[in-house]
Image: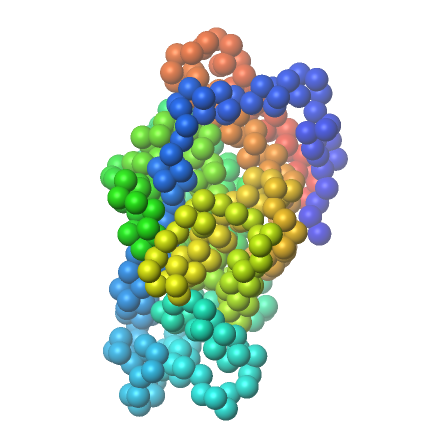
Length: 386
């Protein structure tokens, strides 16, 4: 059960001065100053899944130390079964793990795999089956005791007006579930075009992406060019969703990953699911590939919106995110995460004003006020979790 706030639990409990700060909403002012943000520039965040399925599958197998040739682990092969090897904690790779299930196999796992192969790209299912996973709850709890802190590299410090390394570190510590799988965040000053598989258009540029094997977030030049510091947190939350999904998350079992992918496919077919341009604008000539990409972006979107404000999501979408979070971080306090994220966005907005030389004296004061509010929220949460 998530700990409850005692002295600073929600916006309703802010004093009048604090309410005025939140009401002012500096981030909206920045949106107006920088103009309408092109969704394909700021919020187009690509997962490694979207790049080249065959190449990624090959890299996964090679990195696992398997002696199998790539042909021996693709569907419908007839090669003799090769010796199993470890792909990650508790997961065995063998030909039988990912070849088409025989008609006689009536297990729940086999039924799910068959169903998914009829819906999404087969290689996405293959990648799931050989991805790093835990074998059971005992192993998961042991791993969750040793989750490394997210390393934010110095390249992030100051790459965007108003952005400092310490703010991003605080964001990951207090806003992202500990088992999401993010281990490193870097800024790379390069232009990254969106994969043509998405069909977003030739002008689409990525703000960030997740680097294989799914534990490193790379912020690209597209984020810098948009010049909107508060929007960075939305992008990072989305990318964290890719790290926590059914391909990258090493704290879920294979069966949980299959269940998650199946829930996402089923939910996308329901008319009242949460809708986002990142999912709805995907166009691919291959229906299975299109659905695969939609599922991937859909989860990252509902994950990030859950962090930002879970009340924005229909109950069916919240349940999917909570299915994951309840396993990777049972004590995660979504109210605390949403509060800190909102205050951090306002702080970054005020710092953006200072960096641009706009009302420096007044906005510098507000930077301090937002820092104080964040400190109060963090202190209160620490006391309640003890």
